[in-house]
Length: 559
Image (cartoon, rainbow, N blue to C red; front, top):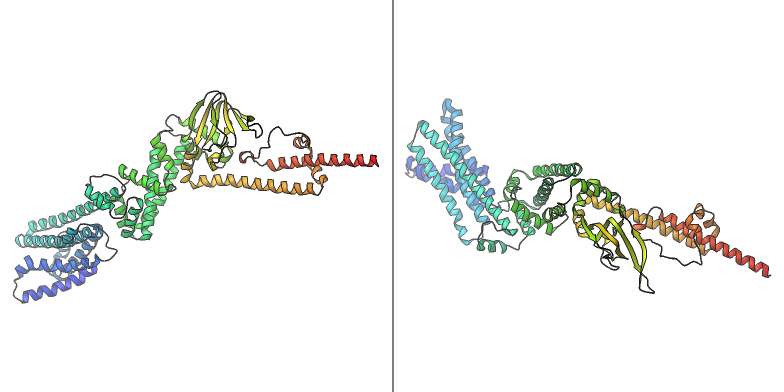
């Protein structure tokens, strides 16, 4: 564009203007009327060509391209015509013409570019006349400037010319801001906001191909290309999460949790600035204008759309906590104490205390009367219960009688159903209040909201599951090995080991009926489980060895 203005448009204008004068048009008529018409049409030719190019996307592109053409034309005009005749006043002439004529040319061509940019984004058939209006405005501005310049002189001319140029620049800035405001309104309607638009405008936007976040990013891809729109998407996600974390900081929180949030914001800031450097000034101007972080309504609508599109992008847990105000009854000290309690639960042992304190905001308090059922056998596992006061009895249904039978009891500090946070499977037993109780409840839905956008917490939970898998594998391998030894009658190898003297091994009786099933629930599996299983097999082997010895003694006596 700069090259066309400096070489193409200026060169053709020079030839045509000279030809017009050779045909009898006076110099005054040329400068007042003819030259502005010729020059503005020639400058507009490249803009009309570029509107077909995919890089010409909206009003800001048109303004930038138009300004570049105008500056290029003014630069050559100054160098070829005015500066050679300036004598000793070259510097003053250059400065004055830069602030006046150069800005006028930039403004005139910028108006044409803006009209073409509006045409590119318009769905109205009448918008086809916009280029004609833009060129007419450019010619009118140029004619007005030249006629004023021919009437005035001296300091007055200089001041008016500079005012004309600066005023034109302000007009361009105002038009760009209007265009960006229109883009913001368009995307706001796409996100479902009512922002002073008519029903007709809203229907027009909806006809563009649906509502929602994908339409927004689809249009942005048309603007900036696939590579840039991926960066814009990440930039907007970061901006949203920074806003969410800042909202967290406005509420009560311990120093530990507040520090963690501030550190997370700082990390987001670093990535935010790195992305902005990659995007460049033009894209950043668009994003800042169309998706400003200070517009709460726009940001809230955008966050909701992002959360629906992919909940792993945003801290939806924090959004939910702010709206629900679940954490409002708790003091920072209470949340900190509950984080310490959560850290002692096995599934959370690898999760940091700040994360657990944040998660503690979703915990609710519930009181149950004596005999109340917290959940029944077969119910969906949708919550974890931490006992504050009283006792919880766990009951299982006997297959033979169909009656509930006590399995175990939990005292204050005990945790019931923590594995349901991970699998949501059916409850394997019934939980019942033994006397009045008070429990802290963490819902599975809140836990899933929490971990969705926190991969480090997911990794910590996966580490817990990996430990369970390792122990379970070790237990199965140990059991298989011991079964093979029992099958071969190799009792001595099992009995002679150090585990044979364990209380578990000593308590095994082949004739006794078990009073309760052995507990190998996932929550009960620990590093001691393989040893416990080996102890059971050792006890069985010892009893089998004794029984075979007694059979052998009986046989020898009979003989």
